Length: 352
Image 1: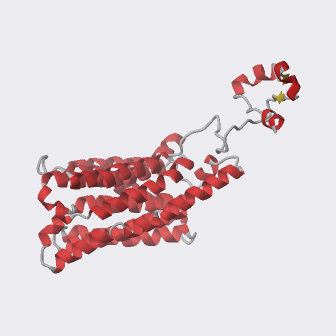
Image 2: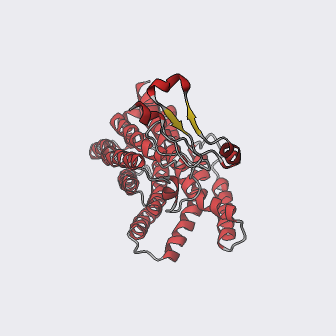
Image 3: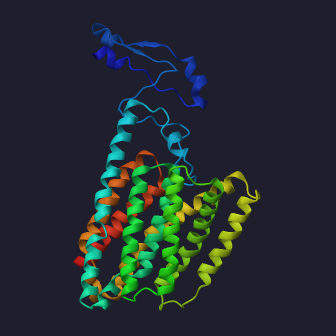
């Protein structure tokens, strides 16, 4: 048994050390262990793995900008039995996240329904419609990101997020805390986005139409993000559409240059990753908007459901192992932020 442990092959050196290493490749004997008859075989073409974790490449890089479906396969090179075990385990964690995300908005929806039925519409002002809209647009954009990567569990989670958040927006529109024109525009985008994403996931969508949708969410996300950030702090800042209009012009210019081949390969890849990152930032802004509302109107926090915050913290926490395994920096950033701030942060606000 000891002999089998010490004769485990070592990892190949990085290319720049390969020549030097080959000069010293040999079978090493240890005199002090002669009575055990132990040998350590060293060769440049062998591999040494002390722990049963997936192998790490020398040219390893985080996959965050390119949302192509091929990224996941490239990250998991080697596909060893150990990697497959971790892949299966983290997939189960992601699938388990469907349970808290399915129930995530239910306590808030029930509380809103009670307030609406009792005529207490003012209680719904504790839920900022801008924050919910931010979350909805973030979920919808992330749905496109994960649908393209064929991450089934994440697609289901984002779909649940879109549908449940939209129900809350319907209640806010009924309470007249969300302007009707914004609600109607949101409804058109949500229905179109769900249909297009699922057609693309099952391979039933024309490539040109999907390309148009990707351009739309890139321009829309980049335009909406700074505008919502700015609007959150009105009236402490002037009410202006300048942030959104400026971002819109920049987004249209970037997408146009990318589609007409005026950008380098790295530039095209960067523009392609904008939609995913703006979606993540939109998703991350929701807890900021909620905590800012809590700070301004602490008396309205009774309209919030602490159980919803707890479910958000649990659901996003279950997504973290999968994001780490496939080394998706964007997914990890969004889930970690939501776990800490949307979940624990808002629970701390309610406690204080």
